Image (cartoon, rainbow, N blue to C red):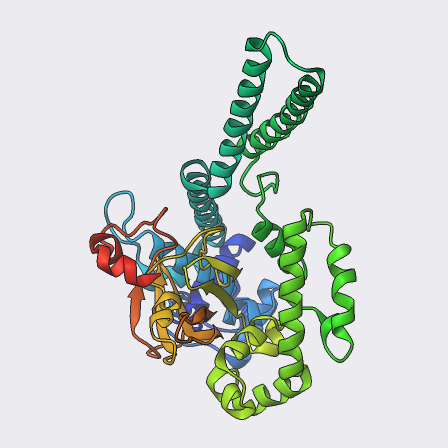
Amino acid sequence: MSQRSMIGTRIRQKRVSSGLRQSELAKRAGISPSYLNLIEHNRRRIGGKTLLQIAQVLQVEPASLSEGAEAALLSALQEAAGAHLTGAAGSAPERDRIEEFVGRFPGWAGLVADLARRGGRLERTVEVLTERLAHDPQLAEALHEVISTATSIRSTAAILAETQELEPEWQMRFHRNLNEDGQRLSEGAEALMRYLEGAPETGTDIKSPQDELHAFLEDHGFHFPQLEGWGAATRINAMVAGAPMLETTPARGLAAQALTQYVEDARALPLDQVQKLIARHGPGPDALAEATGRPLAQVFRRLAMLPEEVAGGPVGLIVADGAGAILLRKPVLGFAVPRGGAGCTLWPLYEVLTQPARPLRATLRQADLRIEALAVAEEIRPAGFDRAALLRGHMLLRPPVAGAAPERQVGTTCRICAMGDCPARREPSILATGV
């Protein structure tokens, strides 16, 4: 049922909430009660002068009757209905009557939408906790650090306890080692406790250099206006040194590399040129690459680092090396990307690494989310007679276009995946070629 056909339902809801009888509203609006009854049951169209008269009597804006519920609430309920295909009694929700439900019971509709959003957040929290406690490489690294340090302390203490005559110089050295290892053990145990006690979204967990890099990029929205134009390279060191989220030396090194790449891409594709080309050709990467003569991978990076209003909408990007490890991640539209390690082997990101000359396009379905993925491989180092080529995969993510590309079901990573019948896990050969 269209929003226009729901005007009668909204008039009835407003009349009842105002305490007016149907005959009273009809009289004050200058129409017959029988005609108003047909309108309220959505059996007669209404507009123009009659709509204005009824809105005036009800003391509401005419738009609130003709437009009804906000699109966001309708979209949230549609999403909730798609995520839960059957209700508590086993019956599917009546998706064709969502607008009627919103028009008649706006309070209940808002509550249902809010509960659906909360349920989605809880599901994501459970997924994050599952990954952290069962498969997170940062947790494994922290445990390894604690265990190796404790083993070192035990070995040093055993030498001191079992050696009756030990030269003072060696004794002092062992005491120094004990002190240093004890400090390492204390720091490692403290970091591990912060990880186990911290909530997934508090930022108190153990962070790898890649985590620090992505926190830095997200803090700037993946866009750096100060690095546009000439002389930008001279500002990189100051930006990295002044970033509080870059706590470790490896993270600062990664950030410097990322910003250097940003400057190179900005020089090759200046912002004003990109804006003009998008206005002329649209945000399609292939059209921009053809117009500028630049590689698709570089166009992908440039689009992903632009604000949405410039790039023509939300754009995400995932970059992986030849071993499958994710080097850069900019999720978009709720598409789940693992914090570390490799992503789903069914992503076209990994397929292009075996076909570097062929760009790919696919519509990815991750649970109930659909997103368009464009993938291409970039040659970092050409092959030689005595060495293999080094490749890097790029996958651009953006809202899907109906019928634009074949659809494929994918997951997040093999470590946590809701796909019960995944061909990559069923056939080892497919998994091997994916990364």
